Image 1: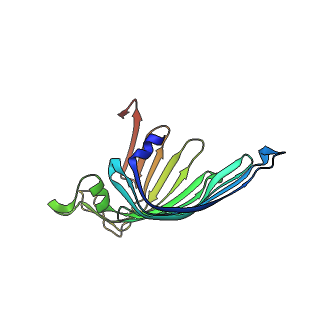
Image 2: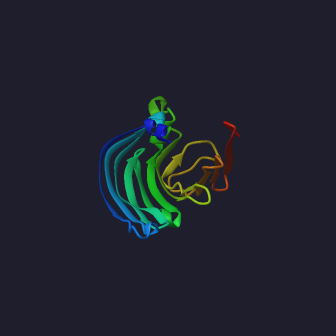
Image 3: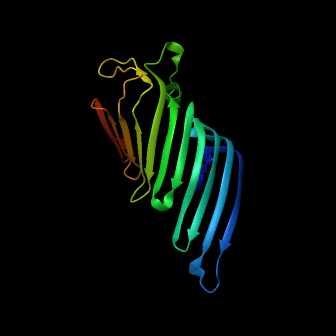
Length: 196
């Protein structure tokens, strides 16, 4: 677990406080509150050279006996857009929303507009939900309004045209499913290190 932290570089500060109540006669009645206010100017995930800027939030770890969870909100700048998270793990939920520039997604894949215009352009607005139980899953949705596609039919699209797009990932099963309106569906699963 700690070796994964080697892939990150973090610049900034985190302010916080801790409150603890542990009655000696009933240690199961532990009450713990850890509050944190991250103010990070940059977080870099080195394997992808993915840079998160201006990450800020109000987070709290709350524990009352056996009940515990992370609550709060966070927001940052990412891939030419923004991302915000409303975190409430006692109810198994992390709600996400944001936007991303398609040019930044192409750059992440090693492509840019130096050879001409990109086939897909615009600002992608999206929302999502992370569910933690029974296994971690992520569901992202967008209507793709604001995105222009100059790909051949049936993938040509104007910026005003809505195309519902849903991506679902089951982290433990290493499975990804994507559905683009009634145009395309894809399912990918990793088994024994191979993508199928």
